[in-house]
Length: 186
Ligand code: ADP
Ligand code: 5GP
Image (tube, rainbow, N blue to C red; front, side):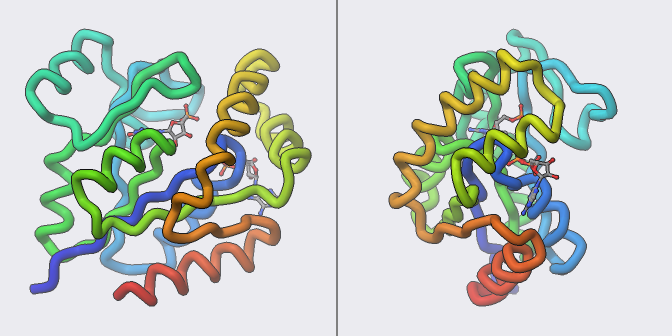
């Protein structure tokens, strides 16, 4: 049986990673999303084990100490996020392709460990549009949005290091392009 392919999806907060990932998971079979662990608290509507495994700082320390994370990073200078390795390897060994929705620091760590992983940067059409999307989403405070925009500027500087850059302007066009990209690796 062929082993699955690992796809890394990164890009600034608000560029549309979550939206695109949800759409392609409905369209492509044998594709799964890795659920990360995080020390941030759940937002209203988020469920433990669905969006993230919401864990304490001590539990996160334990995961690092027991080599349970494929990568991890402090994101937006605030909370730690990491990819639990067990589920990823199990899915890949079962022949499923796996999506990691992680930040640029995490992508760099994965590429060192698994060079054949395919990295895709979800690029907003402009910085103004990114700001608009974050404001419209309304899931963070003004201060948190500013923090995310600061991180975004740094992340955008790294986009040329990715295997692919996908501009998420028209949602349907971007969804189709991401589906086609993944299918082309199969
Ligand atoms: P991320 O996961 O990268 O932080 P989201 O998927 O949450 O971003 O998208 C941020 C906001 O922008 C959401 O409100 C989403 O509905 C909206 N959005 C995503 N893609 C597009 C698009 N192509 N055009 C307009 N709005 C979009
Ligand atoms: P949010 O708090 O909005 O859910 O996520 C903030 C950022 O954390 C996102 O941009 C996302 O890419 C990143 N992130 C989520 N999970 C992981 C992970 O497991 N590892 C790393 N390095 N970043 C992650």
